[in-house]
Amino acid sequence: MFGTPRSGANAYAKVGMETGVIAANPHKLIVMLFEGAQVALNNALQCMQAGKVAEKGKAISKAISIIDNGLRASLDKNAGGEIAANLDSLYEYMSARLLQANLNNQPELIQEVLALLQDIKGAWEEISPQADAQASAAVPPQAAAASSYDALAPHMPRLMKA
Image (cartoon, rainbow, N blue to C red; front, side):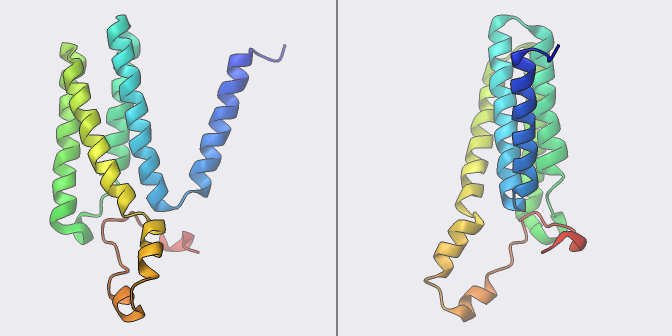
C-alpha cells in the first residue's frame, strides 16, 4: 500500500541529496560532482567483479555523464586559461578510459580514473571558500582584494547571485 521500505529510503535519500544541492555553494557542487563520479565508479567495479554487465555499463555511463556534463561543462575556458584547458583534456581522457574500461572489462582503467578524480578533488577541496576565509584572516585587506577572484571556480548566473 505504501511501498517498500527500500523505496521509502531511496526517496528520503533523494530528497536529502536535492536539498544538499539547493543549499550548496558552487564550490561544494563541484565537490559533489567528484563524489558522485567516484560512487558510480566504485559501483561499476563491484558490478564488474559480480559479472553484472548491464549494471556495470549503467554505472560507467553515469560516471562519464558526471565528468562530461558536470565537471567538464563547468569549466570556464576563457577565464581559466591553460589550467582550464588542461582540465578539459584530462576530463576527456578520463571519459575515453572509462569507455575503454566498459568495452574491455578492464577494472584497472576504472582504478586509474578513480585515482585521477581523487587527486583533482583533493586539490579542489584545498581551495575551498572556507579555507580561503581562514587564510584571508591573516592576509592584509589590500592583498586579499587582489587575489579574491578565482577564474576556475564555477560561477552562478547574475540573476542568482546573492
